[in-house]
Amino acid sequence: MSKPARAARGPKRGGPRGMAKPTNLGETIKRIGQYMESDKWMLLIVFFAIILSAGANILGISALQIVIDDFLQPILEGGGGDLLGEFVFVIGAVGVIYLIGVISTYTFNRLMIGISARTMYKLRIDLFRKMEALPIKFYDTTTHGNLMSLYTNDIDTLRQVLSNGITGFFNSFITVVGVFIMMIIYSWQLTIIVVLMMYLMFMFVRLIGGKSANYFKQQQQELGRVNGYIEEMIEGQKVVKVFSRQEKVIEEFDLLNEELRKNATKANVFANILMPIMINLSYVLYALTAMVGGIFAINGVLTIGTVIVFLQYTRTMSQPINQVSQQMNSVLIALAGAERVFKVIDEEPEFDEGHVTMVPVEINDQNQLTEVDYRTGDFAWKEVDQAGVINYTHVRGNVVFNDVTFGYDEKKTVLKNVSLYAKPGQKIAFVGSTGAGKTTITNLINRFYDVPSGNISIDGIEINKIKKPDLRRSLSMVLQDTHLFTGTVMENIRYGRLDATDEEVIAAAKLANADTFIRHLEDGYQTILKSDASNLSQGQRQLLAIARAAIAETPILILDEATSSIDTRTEKLIQLGMDRLMEGKTSFIIAHRLSTVRSAKAIMVLEQGEIIERGDHDQLIEQRGRYYELSTGLFELT
Image 1 (cartoon, rainbow, N blue to C red):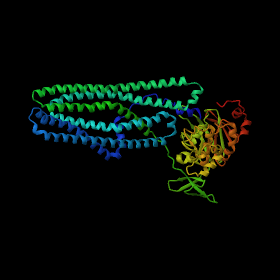
Image 2: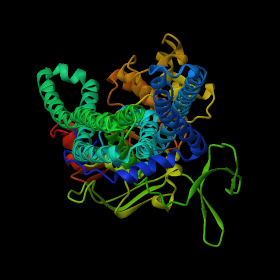
Image 3: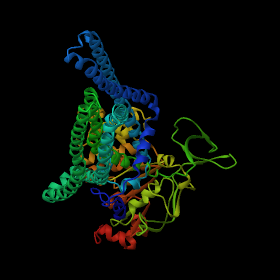
């Protein structure tokens, strides 16, 4: 890959160092609610159960005043012997009320677990679908650790808050409102004291909670950077150990980890001091209410039962506020994570204005094309004009670059006024120094990046008019960095064409000369590959990638250093298979090994984004230019 292409990817481990400002938390909460809209009737049941639970708790406390004033006090004074039956009945009624509360609490907690799980299911689907729709440029400039953190950290944290946080907040709200109403009924004088103290407590929540929100946002970003660095180091352990860079890696990790520690400390300092402050203020409120209530009871303004019930209500009102302060930590983390998830969901998807599609066709003796609904091995570009007339163009792989200029960013141009053509079935090779722009050309053919200046056409149709999925179905690629998926060997080869039969898979493997080593595996074609086929050699993985491209049977083939990881003996063994694979296909070959490109009909020599030489091997040797220098070792590729 060219240096500009690598540069476009950005740093793999750190991501952007600047701290993005938090978005509107109200909007984030609203969007979370939209994911729960399909469960609105279930949510109504949940909220009704919460009301029952809170109401049962409030009524149970209220019954305490009746028990004390109407039963216990007369009994203690010796005049309530005939009230025993009524006393037992009241106690039984209170038990039923609390039983209803217990059942209601279990109900809303159980239902909310299911609602939160379904919500996270939908959120994961939307996030994954958006990630599949995002352009390659997004992945080139975003760390893998940050992306994985969305699934492993942010979404899971949000699930935990939805399971308990929503019900907790709503239950606290109902409890506070209900208790406040009962307080006014029992004593408006004592209620004034409670309101003043509650206002002071809310001011602390607002002040301290607001400060911690900003630090939690930074904590989430630093966590993504740490995860990204860990992932990179795990993947590169061989390189780290070969160059004995363990100490340097540990040093860099310590710096990232220190940033995470600082932000996590600041976030949790504010979040964790909130709870002790709230608890101590609630103790002050309780003591103050007890003192004033006792004075009122001595003077006959309130009964003993009323004072005791009011004290219990004071404790009950303080508990929800304390719970909110305890949950503030988790809520802020969850909302910060939700913002990160929605930020990715809101990313612009890969833009595709194409309208031309690729369809299977049959060709008769008069070379007329007829669209069919089954695979024939022949394809056509299908274009419907404004009048509704359908035009078919046989897909042959005639590729033309016309004065193409391109850069991964505006500051640096990678390709400069590149013009070339590849006739159907022709083999085109690109050679040149690292960073000359060879891989960039292939990135433009499949529209991983769009051309800002000039144009590229296939069979006379500009590629920006072809739908991207159809364009990419017309070509197959074998990259220098192979990637195999978890599954059997046969499934990995079939990935190139999912409707391929077992016989076609085996034929493709034989074409790539992979059949022999596959049959020597423990389970042959049914051998399970894991961890990007770490149980295979690099050369074997490359052979499977070539077989995967072979089974796709596309008219255009791109080989980007396809044999770079294969030893010379293996390269000779597969050369015949590669020739068969490229037969009849328009092939673009990028290689540092000149032996790979020697047989190409046209060889393009690139330097600093420009084609400086072109011709076949013999012609370029005769010119004694850059290709001659590369061929004879007079000029280093790098």
